[in-house]
Image 1 (cartoon, one colour):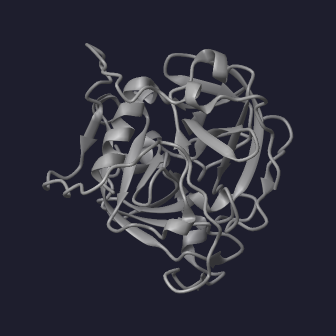
Image 2 (cartoon, rainbow, N blue to C red; image 1 turned 90 degrees about the horizontal axis):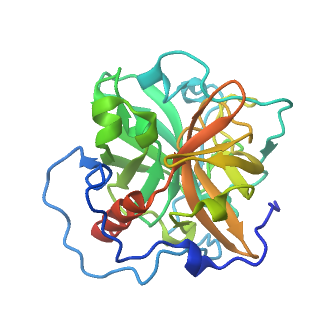
Length: 314
């Protein structure tokens, strides 16, 4: 499925400096671990923070395809936002519904996008979306990992890459370790509505992962932003639906756009397409209002938080 591209890009200009150190910024210590277990021993480092996309493989090492019964109650889960905002409409179709169903989510770049089945501490379950940034780490909305009205940090999250057409071509993975911002956990502040999911084991490398960046206003405003996730409608979830529109504007902490979305797409990566193949996440879709949808913009302190976690869990 083609998508709009940003002409004449320079990915190096878009990716934030690895040496950036925030000073006196409230975001500098935003990532809070849900667990305090000793970190895993890091035996190697990533050379870059760019995208990985490998040809799909169906041989040994890839989880067998899983078929979900049509009657499964997982098809009617509430959006994760309900766990923090209550039962209200927070993601919108603006004008006509222009989303397109992804015909084969096992292809690129769609297989880097995962459906979430979130089990709260109270046992209630919710739906969300996340994107891989390494074989073990995914970015998502803060309200997908920390549910204020359902016991705080999730008890566990099932992560299902490329779920679509009643198939799970890469199987599913479980996560019990999550991170979210102090601004979200302590204040329920939507400016800091972002989180990290750390799988209990690496996902298969053929899934690949997205690049991520702290982009300037120049790189964001009036550029095409891509949104793809797992809405409840029109198929009663789970199928990937995709839309792209220009970014209307950006603020220090948010990106605003009229790309359509509905419940279940919370946590979807907002990405720019660079040239023929490179895609870079510049924000995380969260909520919306009567005239626009919006997401949390990746700032330089957030970039460094993501980089640090990606390095630690690899």
